[in-house]
Length: 274
Image 1: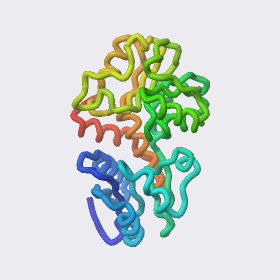
Image 2 (image 1 turned 30 degrees about the vertical axis):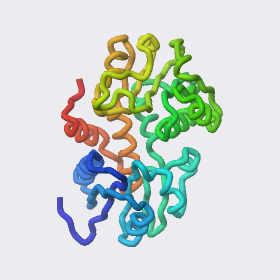
Image 3 (image 1 turned 180 degrees about the vertical axis):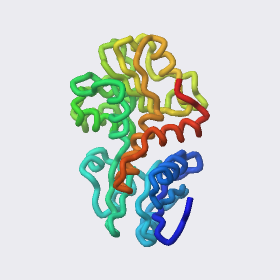
Image 4 (image 1 turned 135 degrees about the vertical axis):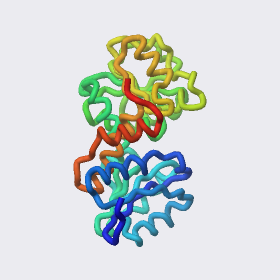
């Protein structure tokens, strides 16, 4: 990697960020495409100061992760309508000093799913009611899917369903396998609680596509069970890579090397595709 006075600086703002796979993924993509850029991880407690610093230093853009996806919004000059409707920003583009906010989480999930199945007109159960659920459900609905929010907490689940104008079902009543697609947006099954599953395995039938946004472990118990029961499965790396590809393209104007970005993440996780 050659660094000179024309090198554009990018990064991820979050707290903590030491675990982030984004620097390796984006730096390899920059190098492969011959783009003169460098991507670093910034452990940021004060998002206001970080945004001011990024603007003053002329950073080309940055990723936003926990806990700053909502707090960053009023600090930007403009927020894309999709991100505003979702209520969170995970991508900032510096356009000549004007900071533009986007959300690529939901778009990444839709791209990952459409590799394996059709979403338009299909019934989709979104498990969870947090920020990821909101982004994914919003973008799937925009893509023509019929969404049902399923959540353990009734208050939170009903609130999200009301915001999206879609049905809500308490997790305790999620007992009929009538959905084409199931998306787990919760942390259930993530390391170290890898034996946990968010739904009863009887809900998983061969006609379904099952996606888990968890990617550590890569093959969660939910995905292993779904594959064993004949479902089509989509791992969390796919969403992570596609949301990163959207960022790469926003920043560089170049087509993202998606396969290489996925390979980089898979190698970092110490995993390989079957």
